[in-house]
Image (tube, rainbow over all chains, first blue to last red; front, top):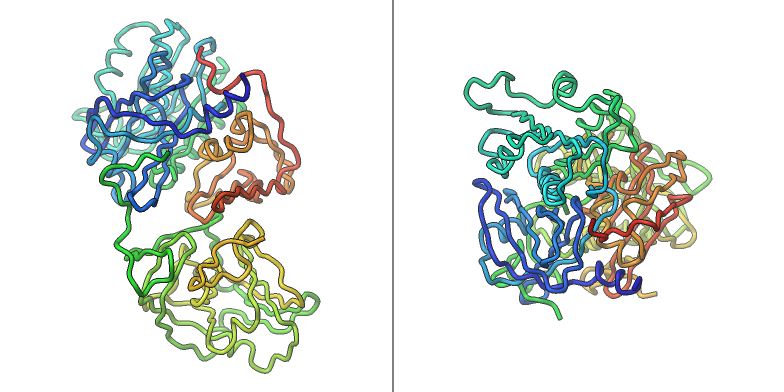
Length: 253
Length: 199
Length: 96
């Protein structure tokens, strides 16, 4: 029913934390069992609301990291920000068994649906990898063979989320190609010196624009602006270049 | 029914009896903005007072800085509920800027670089209640906090202290500015908790 | 472009605006009343660190939309957009 569909996305529902696991020294994945979860599409996010006993509340948006599924479970990965109000609580206080309130799934533009067949270029800056791993997981669970490339820019090797999973994906030999770009510290003997993504990297390690790929760019605002300009300059179609900005420090809201 | 989050209290410290109702104390200085931070070069900066038809007064940065200024120690109260006590500023009083200006127009719309506006009764910006501030905590006011100069009207909620101020337009009737036209109170007295429009 | 990068984008307004719009607004195409640029609402520059939510045209910076949540009321000002075009065929939570 259309009426129910509207209310689904607008209502705050309760989610129980069923597992936690650290991705890096500052990022943690929370696995949530969500009451009456209507399902989601890769790329969508949820709004999480925390309420203090005196009624004070704070709301933040987090991308869903997990692939679409029908079991009412989702995962979010939260990066702890130095002056954050909500992220320190979610990454350090919350334990299995705690309840959170969330609203969603939200978003219809920055999504990848498994019936899409065209080449996909993913570009992640730091925690911007979260909605993009959902797209990779969605591709795997749907058995899609759509050609995917991921350009993942991080500060240093310890900042990579989902490292083992990404390695397994690129070793699988079914058209997922992953390139890492390190901006501050590289692994030993790394061929490219530390630095921000630039035109030569785009030319070497992303789909040529002649393939008319759809691209998804996610991360801090300044990263997204830079990456978008580079892809558009390389001939990517603006209407097929989809972006999601996480704000000046990578925090949304 | 809202779920209370075990162990969550946000950034706040316990309420203090000296604060206006509904406020909490902060020790940092949050930056709130409805748009990009304007970067105004001092050789193009100006502050004007007009009446809607005629420019009555104008200062460029040099002439503005030649005006007598004073230090102000005051508390700030933001409608988003944070209060910051004991802040120190340096600025030119609106009493100085409006000296020898004769007007019977009782209201003013303050205008900023960018597109921000906020309205005030003229009687709330005279008699040592308002300044055009250009220093905060002993240093030049930073762009993210409204530099080179912002309006400072501490007896009202901080949204009335327009950042990046560039002028005031005198008006015969009160008209809502940027936030006042979107549900926020036309006057904004924190001690009467006038956050929102009552209409 | 805004050197301070103190904005997010229209995606982040999806939750609040879903209380008003029955269909997903992030994929709607909007036209700026100031410069005429047509962009997806997801691409709007969104300022959320203020007592409300302000969406600006990514090309000219003009205000497209403002939203304030005041107690039990929502104030929405759409004056900065001349047209919003929605595609109602794909719903945001279709799982496929």
